[in-house]
Length: 406
Image (cartoon, rainbow, N blue to C red; front, top):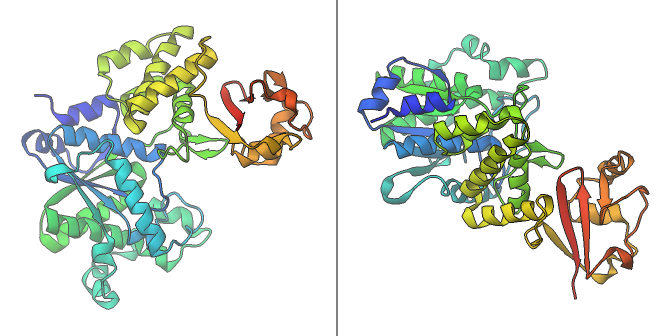
C-alpha cells in the first residue's frame, strides 16, 4: 500500500516537515490532523483550495481531518503576509462566514460519521480569562524568539499592534486544545504558517510532555513565483455568486503552459502518470491538458454538471459550437437602450470600474458584437441587440451576454 507521504511528495505538496519520522508515522498509524481556515470572508478562494486538496488526500488515506475555523482568532487577525492590520469583523459576520466555509469544505471533505470534524476556536478562545491565559500560556513564549518570526518581522517597520502580537499565542493554544480534545497530533497548512506551527508544537511539548508534528504545503504560485488566483476583478472565489463556474473554468483554461503540471498535480486527482503525459505536450497540443485541468478543478469545486456547462460554453465560443446558453449572461430592462456601455458593464460587474473600462477601450480590448468599442462614451442602441441579445467580449477570451427581458 502506497504511503500517503510519498503521494504528497510526488504531487508537490510538501514544503517543510518538522520531523523525519513523519513518513513512518503516516504509514503505520491513522492520525488526527488539522488545518485552520480564517473566516474573514463568506467564501474561500483558490489560495485555500490547495489546503483543501491537501486535507482530502490525507482523508482518502484514512487519516481524520479537523477543519478549524478561526471564529476566535478572526476577531484578532492574522498578521502573516499582511503589511497592514486586517479589517475588524463582527461576531455575526464571522458566524455567517463560518457557515459558508463549512458548505464549501464539504464538497471535498466527508464530515459524516465522524470521518472529519469542523471546529470553531471561538468555543474555547472567547471564554478565556486574560490573566489566566497569560499566566498559563504566555509564560511559555519568548518575545525575543517571536520577533524573529517572519510573520512579525515584516510588520515591525509599519507597526504591529499588541492585538496581532497575540495571534501566535492563540494559534499555538488552538493546537494544544485540539490535542487535548481530539488527540490531534499534526498541523498542516501553508508554508507562511511555519512559525505559528512550531509555536504550537513547542507548547504541547511544554504543557503535555508529548510530541506533535507539522507539515507545510507549497503556496499556489506560478512559474514566476507570483501567487495564483488573482484576476482583474480580484480573487478567484470558490463561491459561484462571486466567481461564476464559467469564469472559474476559464481561469484554469488560460493558465500559462509552464504552470499546467503544477496545477494538475496539486489541484486535481488525475493520476500522476497522466499528469506527466498531459504536461509533456507541446505548443498547441498543451491545450488538451488545459481543458482537462479546467474541467477537473471546476468539477471538484462546482460539481460535474456545472463543469460540463462551462465546458460547453467554452466550446461554443472558441470551438465553433452553437450552444451559447451557458455563457455568463445578465438580464437587463428595456431601458438599457441609450445607457452608457461602461455604466452597464460596471453594474453587471463585467468590469470592476469605469476607469478600468476606459483603459480597456483605449487598448482596444473591448468588443460589442465583435465590433471594437472605440468611444469611452458609447451607449447601447437598439441595433446592438439581435434577438434581444448583445455579446460583450473583454480581452481575448472573456465573453458575456446581455439579454433584454421581454
